[in-house]
Length: 211
Image 1 (cartoon, one colour):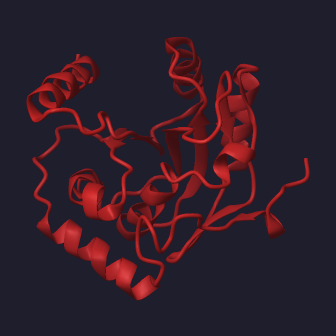
Image 2 (cartoon, helix red, strand yellow):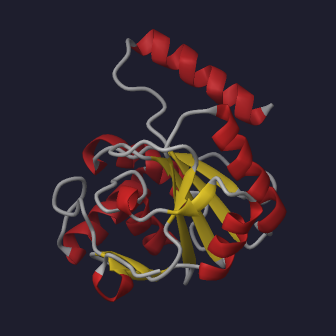
């Protein structure tokens, strides 16, 4: 397959908008958010995170709690999962090769894991177009670059909110992602509802994950 990105590098789409485009400013901002975060101790090994994906001035103070909990840990690959804001389709779109670039550098795609996930079900497939301008995955990468050692990446965008698509992807991950893989689910949970309702709705999601 021929990539639509020069030299197989997916350039940052929202640097300078969702987060600073200057490396020094971005690094300093993330350091500040991490310094203010005080996550509780988590028993056992962390295998997955749920993090928000709005602009950093809105989401990063919350995201920092999750990322500080994995600071200094070692993962071979991070599977980034988000929802496609610009394009709808039935299934999961994988960016399967090349590199993702942020102001803090480039992260190589784990082509091997991407191909194993796609082999698990035809509804997990290569589709680059949803990734071109998508912010939900991109905003997570600078945090990961700051808190982890070297790692590879598998970016995945769901084109539908169906339970079937989520189950298909979940089954493929369960069969192919070992203990050296971190799964990061990027979601805003809710968009501007009244506080009490947001707390209720988000609490139900949190309880479902924990249960």
